[in-house]
Image 1 (cartoon, rainbow, N blue to C red):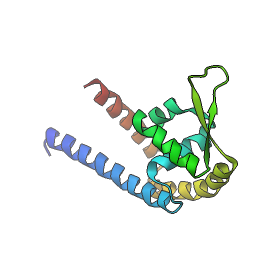
Image 2: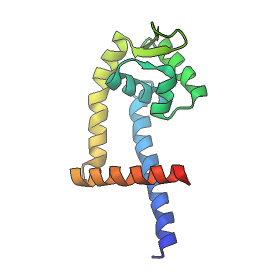
Image 3: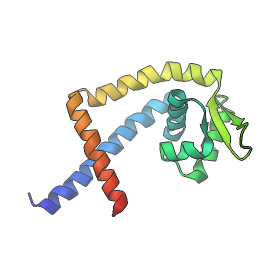
Image 4: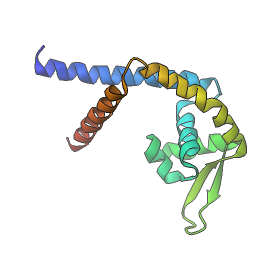
Length: 144
C-alpha cells in the first residue's frame, strides 16, 4: 500500500474508532438522561473536584459558548452547582452537588466497565503505545 494511502487509511480508522467510542458513551449517558457533553463535565468534576467553568470547556473539548449552557442544564437537574471564587470575583467554579456525587458513584463504575470492554483485547503495553502515538499525531496536527 502506498504511503499516502496508508496515511489516509490511518486517518479514516482514527475517526471511525473515535465515532464508535463516542456512540458507546452517548448510549451510556442517555441511560441517565444525560448527553455526552453533560457526562463529560460530570466525569471531570467527579475526578478533579470543583473547576473554573472557563477551564472545564477546554478540558473536555466543549466550546466556550456551549459550556455555560451545559452547566445551566446540569444545574437545572440539581447535580451541579456554581460557586463564586473567593479570591477572584470574575471566576466562577462548578462542582458536583451531593445528588451529583451520588449519581456519579452509581454511573462511573458501569461506565468504566464499558471502557474496559472496548479495550479488553489490547495489552497495557499496546494502550501505552497507542496513547503515545496519538499524542504525537495530535501535537503534530496542531503545528500544521
